[in-house]
Length: 279
Image (cartoon, rainbow, N blue to C red):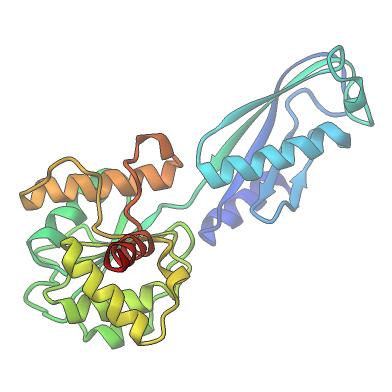
């Protein structure tokens, strides 16, 4: 299959991939000077940038580019590493530009109240598609969320039954009650979603954590859960909370660990509270 045909197919299916292109070289190479290769998430490829050990390194780099969402230049020089001259670079050097081709990320917003409304708007401004879920049709409406990808005004059990978040999806939980938050969170930790955030005070978070553990949810299931959600910017208003939440989701999406405070994952918070009680 042609590289571009495969690229169109992957984008249409909402799957991530990376495009590797030879952008500069010195010496001779067993491929066209503008050769391209499409790398899928599982490492399978369409096209080639010459084969050999160097191409294998490009595939490894491409999978990292897909995971982090940031492009990379991969350079090879036989003067520095002659072992790479195995069926690919026939002397000299080679530069391969690897760029991510990612589907639009989706944020599932549970709770269409004040915080959910401004968080959805902030997420959309940052390039996320949003799915709004609330059992109240007067809140989960096209009038309030005109730019949402989807609006689901159903009881939470019915709404979640038809949703399948991917590893690039984010889930933000801000319903109108602790019980509803817990119900959504119990579903969320069983999905593939890469980011799960729940609003609330530490006391509320610990209450939900304890209730779900009592219901049989293992502690390790909360490793992905950011609760209390958001970066610690002293947010107070709904708009400030939205900025905090979306900023943390962006940091997760971009793999920007350095910008985060000490992570308040739900499991870590629960373990800290347990240690204090034991003292």
